[in-house]
Length: 390
Image (cartoon, rainbow, N blue to C red; front, side):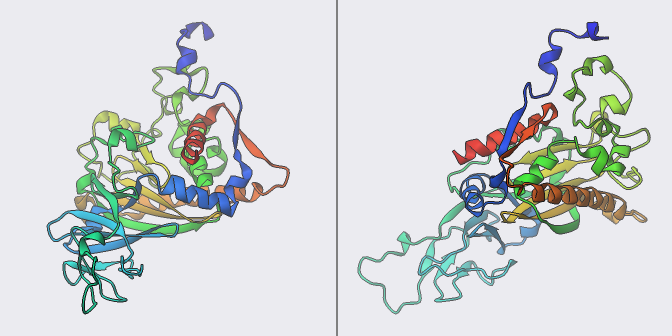
């Protein structure tokens, strides 16, 4: 069958052409390296915070931590969303002490000495001193701004106040396949948090390959037959052209026969998203990601957003949010656990694998791992890490 392949087949085949060294093993547990990555990769990229509806009310706020940096995001009375370092310009006290809440007025008031700032602009409005010293101007002491953006119902921040959220540049894995998903009107039906004893990079590496799938995810590979072949794309094998045009999901991708979505029984319970095209539905699942902290999964009846938060060099917190259409959640007899339980199962299996991987990285002779042909996305990720640190 090899004679059917065109000269372009070698180009179209997704793979590394040679074995590539992985990142240094110490980068996955060394505290100094972890601190370096927080300062560069995490402070230097857009980070997903929450869904916009969590900050829909005027003067609502929530805080968000990036290493030792504490950020407060506020919905101004006029509707604009603003973000600032959660630190008073007087002597540095935290302004908002709760994770989330609603301001009592249009001011952010320091709980220590009552310096007050306009929630809409961050400008210093008043101090608590009886008189202001010569040369002091309130205009010189606004809150330190942080860039804030809303994209399709989700809130993102960037510590560089001049950063611009441009969909063409921000996503490491394109969001193009989400154009028909009604993300803006979908609502959170379930939220789940867990902690994994692994470095944040270990999680991303696991997410970006399927060599582990048959052994780690028996339920998932039964639902998505392509994954039985340890690949994430039909063109990840050199003989992909031999099966081009095949209707078998083991070769073309998509769900098994009769399968509709990521759920325990594979069914969407009659609630597929009407805006999706036949191509979207046939695809069965699609993903976009913004490194280092979020990926979004789109399925015929729901969306799942997974946010990473590095607790330490070898501890990562995951927050998963399942989004549905309001009418789906309100439908009589709809069983949300059919979707949620399956997603949790897959993530728990991944967590176990990541923790095993993390433990082995401490082997004294291990300088770095090696990437095989199918791990081309990991190579892109490693390049992104190295470039960001440089």
